[in-house]
Amino acid sequence: MSILPIARITLLEAVRSRLAWLIGAVLLFSLAIAGFLQQVAVIEAREIQAAIIAASVRACAVFFVVLFVVMSVVRESNDKFFELVLSQAMPRSSYLFGKFLGVAAAAAAIAVVLSVPVALFAPLARMPAWTLSLFGELLIMAAVSLFCVLTFNHVLTALSAAAAFYLLARSLAALRIIAETSEQTVALAPRLADWFIQGVALLMPRLDQMTQAGWLIDAAPDAAALASVLAQTVIYVTLILGAALFDLYRQDL
Amino acid sequence: MRVRPTRDVPAWVKLTALVGLAVQIAWGSLQPAPRAMAEDLPQPPSVNVLRLAALGEPIAAAKLLMLYIQAFDYRAGTRIPYRKLDYDALIGWLGRILNLDPAGQYPLWSAARLYAEVPDPDRQRKMLNFIYREYLADPNRRWPWLAHATIIAKHELKDLPLARKYAVALQKHTTDPNAPLWVKQMEPFILADMGELEQARILIGGLIASGQVKDRRDAELLKRRLEEIEERLKKAKR
Image 1 (cartoon, rainbow over the protein chains, first blue to last red):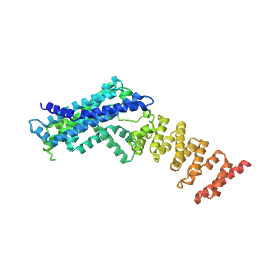
Image 2: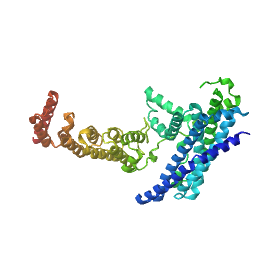
Image 3: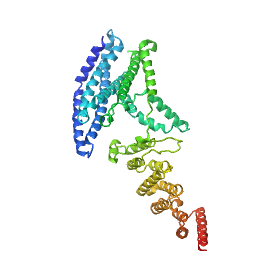
Image 4: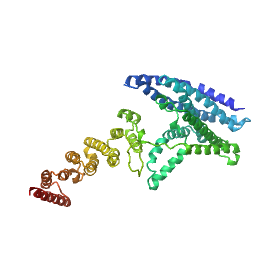
């Protein structure tokens, strides 16, 4: 199988691309923020530290994965590495699966390492569920970034599309709540807007339900919530990789 | 970039994409829709925290927050709206939104036209008190909402002393030339309803004599009301 060598190259690229330095910087920054919060919080200092650091490292982890995937694929495209790989006797799907597997391995490492500063301020028993959910979120965003960069083939467009997707997925629940106020109205325009939002919601992953800081400071997620997160990850990764493959096979290189 | 025809895509790839799409739509439709239940309305964070979260866009954050807050316990057509809402938390949120966007009218509009019109006197009083406090901070921009609060206090709560307190505030603090005269002259009418006819007569008479009333119809209305009060006074003396 040619998937594993591509996955290995991708993982090596992640190791050599100074991603570790960035993650180290985030770790240091998290500790500095924790120290600052310790000074300014009057009560619930640990809860505040856990919630703010968890939210920060979650955003950083997603940013790093998206950035790495987009830059890596664009670089390979510019270096004609992609054409070189496809000139070998291997299907295009091997490239995509290999790439995704490599990024998934890097995402697992990022999720575990960036959980460390959170674990300093949250109960250790709560960390596995949070880290697993972060990994699922990173897998979804890795698949989405791959799809965006293979479709647009341009750094700025791919990054913008991935960022827009992430922001929309994270804020969709709030948008749906706001749109709910137009449910009872008879006017057509607000009802159309509501239907549009409900339709988009069907196609988007519920990232607002994943990797919640509340799991660290309020109540741990129950088995059903965790199973839902895992199911959402599997379903969405399958959908996006399917769409990316479809696009990849249609490209006339 | 040139693209190849769809038939060149292997069947298993098309199948994967289609099955993934179908499963995602099925999964999405099985998930419960997010709802803002009344019990879920939390206590508001401090203004400083909200300013930090607004990332330098306090007005945009205030507008978005207002849309979000109004969705709590919103059920058009329900018999008793907002009955489960924690009004102390709600007032806290509305106050914070006004702090972020002092020129915004939406929070006080909502307070006067939505939250103060619930069939629950305690909640109405809380909301009217909030409107009164916020009116004093910016009378010339916020007088419409205290005027509405005065009407609610008079006609719905039947609390004439409270309505008079608001009317006096409107008269004393509103200097906006665009404010209609009736907004600043509600006090004598409330006094008359309270049975304080002599005071009402003096106030209306003074108003007519001052020449502040430029509109002919307003002047006639005041004269008619003055005559009614004088008539009632004569009957009371007999």
